[in-house]
Image (cartoon, rainbow, N blue to C red; front, top):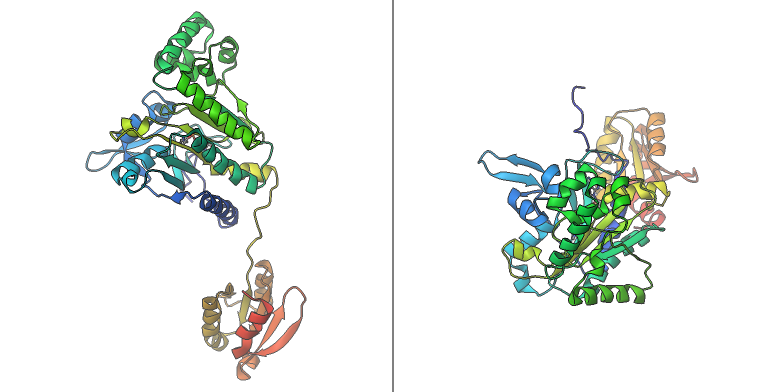
Amino acid sequence: MNYRIPTGTKDTLPADIPRWHHVEKVIGSVMRRFNYKEIRTPVFEYTELFTRGIGETTDVVGKEMYTFLDKGNESLTLRPEMTASVVRSYLENNLGSAQPLNKLYYLGPMFRQERPQKGRLRQFMQFGVEAIGSALPEQDVETMLVAMTVYEELGLHGLTFKINSVGCPVCRPGYREVLVRFLNGVRDGLSPESVKRLETNPMRILDSKNEQDVAVTANAPLMKDHLCDECRTHFERVQRALGALHIEFEVDGRLVRGLDYYTRTAYEIQSGSLGSQNALGGGGRYDLLAESLGGPPTPAVGFAAGMERLLLVMEAEQLPFGEPEVLDLFWVALGEPAMTFSIPYIHALRKHGYRCDVDYLNRSMKAQLREANRQQARYVVIVGDQELQQAQCQVKNMSTGEQSAVPVDSVMQFLQSALPL
Ligand code: HAM
């Protein structure tokens, strides 16, 4: 074979699909109970939506976007995340005029040209929510609860939940000045990457993983200690609501997320089973994003979470992925007349709701029974020449080995009593 899959992407093979279905089902069920409605947007958008929305100085926009000119010379970008797309769609479709609060969720592929490693891909799946229209701190907490409920119902435990406040345009400029003054004082000890960030995005230096940066910024001033009254009140109310729910959290003053649109609340959920890419999901409030895209002032909060990482944790912790799906019935038809005779019965069983299959490889009876076993079929129906003549078939219960002759017309009835749907 001359072709291979692009670096940093993955095939999801049939054997992997039940795991995904299980996770998707739990996500869908949690979203329904929290009353979030699904939204789907295109996988590509005009590039400017992301450069404006996410911020030019972020790694995502600066280094990681899959951007291309289409044949009409338009610059398009494969979405690296969905918050900007959802807000674009919210504004473009006037969703705010239909109802003042839109609680939306999504699930889909995102694209970032990062250096691939465990838990880091170039095409990856996210699920996430965006609650657009509410400024209440309890709405922030509801989005956190959505994520935690999904993890809880999938059986994850021992997660670390970190929150911070990244302030707002009232308090952030003053803090930034204090921070830059501090960082300039330790400039010589910073990594070259962080020295560059000093000009563009100094707050990001605080969540650098570089040991040198961590050491010299140990006593750096933190945003959470420089919040304006409104931001502080908001942050305290988030913590009170989490307290009322008995949710353990850690206030991490160094948590600065990698996207520029955040205001006030920022949060991240981490797992110890993931190694260096330990963020299962993250989010926060982005009260200024709608305005920066040309819409009216619209408070909003949300999160997104990586699904491959979630599956890695579930595999590492050997969590159950639901019941494996098995065949209800494997129909062994021996020879063409038996096959022609059997097809309408198989079709009727399938339309009725049974999961049935038949052999299309003209194999021997022994090989077909082996196949039925491999597929863990609950029942096998056998129709050969002799059965054909008598319009009968043999029905075998694969778990007990019990076998009985049944008129072919009655297979449906037989199954209905043996395997009620
Ligand atoms: P993010 O932190 O960039 O936030 O991504 C959220 C999650 O997506 C990460 O915690 C991680 O689990 C997963 N993820 C990110 N990059 C990769 C990758 N290269 N490979 C595998 N998984 C990855 C956002 O995307 C924001 N839109 C979240 C948000 C929604 N904020 C407000 N609303």
